[in-house]
Length: 333
Ligand code: NAD
Ligand code: LMR
Image (cartoon, rainbow, N blue to C red; front, side, top):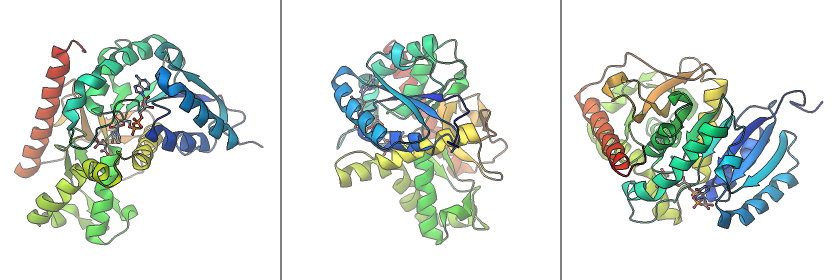
């Protein structure tokens, strides 16, 4: 029998569908990598008018893959149509950072996109909608979208720091010479920006405490932390374009773990609406250590921080406060 034939398709809206992340993302969603091998999906591609033709080309290729789980594709340039009935919304469409640009430069350019999209999600998405913002500055764009969707619970709006999390796993794996699958409990704190703090103090690295590796402070602060935090810029410098396949992979991981659950004994990282945990002001979208049992993200509680970690978390959160104040001044929230 066709896998999932009996299940109702899940509506997945992808904005920026004609962009480079969209191209890496849509095929994996349609193959079942995001929602599992027995869940059919209906893809709804949202683009700006100039992107519609290219999105039609991508839709032709999706059709040509004959994915058994792909129940339909439609293409829109109006957010009210694009988010209609959306169960999962991946907000990718935004302007990527070019060489030499800082993410803060993008606040104004991209903020305007996420206000109308938040309003549209509020008006037409499904009651169980789950939103992942990938487009930068992701945390603050998620804040803008959430703030403009008053009827949708705030915990449904999330920002992607899973790529940073995966980058941290990869760097740690190389350093400790163990497979990534042997590493657990790494955390990205704060903003998806160069100020983020990848924290290994509570990690389990193939049975070895992460704190033991972190004790080499010059490696930690001069190598590990900046390599992870500035990886996006390094990719842009090397590729001449921002990360795409790895970003798509992070998005797949984020939604999969949100919907299907995180592995026992481990946690992941996600930008979520702060409830005040760990001294992060309520109402900022900040990255935390999180678990899900398939019913929503829970912040891992009770982790203790030394001075080094505390100062770095505080610095990244201070940047989120600045971004929030900037978009507030622009009337976006
Ligand atoms: P891209 O320029 O290749 O594609 C963006 C697409 O979005 C374009 O096709 C454009 O037409 C479309 N778009 C623009 N405004 C839109 C709107 N209002 N509605 C719908 N579509 C719209 O960019 P990309 O490389 O795919 O990157 C997309 C975003 O993801 C960028 O902001 C980038 O910085 C960000 N990003 C985030 C992470 C992360 O870890 N959070 C990682 C990589 C990239
Ligand atoms: C990344 O982390 O790769 C993206 O956010 C792109 C960027 O601007 O760094």
